[in-house]
Length: 204
Image (tube, rainbow, N blue to C red; front, side, top):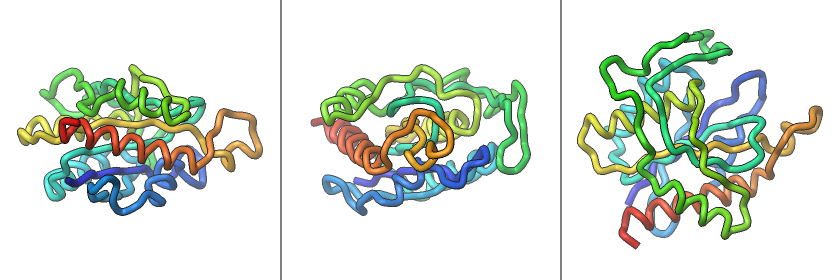
């Protein structure tokens, strides 16, 4: 079994992105599943170009996308991705879309196909604060989730996919008061997400 797990590069003036920092320290295998770890650019066009290639080439059984949601206090498992790119800030290429579709003639939305509530339950049982989120926003994170699910649907693949948002890590909150979580906790959360997702895929 193969799991494609991604994190993002830094954006919005931050020097690090906790999603990629946590992905980097994950083991190469979890419960027998091989992890393919990749960093995604915080650019609308870059994600739309790179992610479909990764999915088609790697043919993973599960795709777990992760990203930073500064201001959120816990791990949030996204339920839905919408076919909209609408940004209050420019991406890392300076692109700032307004009311644009991710893909023309694509569905209005896709639901995550990883077990959202089972993941939240497993995270809480592991003493990691977590909740279901009903909005991945309209920035690059949502575009990544929509792109992955659309790619899988169009290709007729059985791959499960979803998106996990994480808070800032403590070092990002040193100079300004804002919710944060230890990097080690985020990495442990990702391991729980992988285990729960592949368990569902295997029919446990």
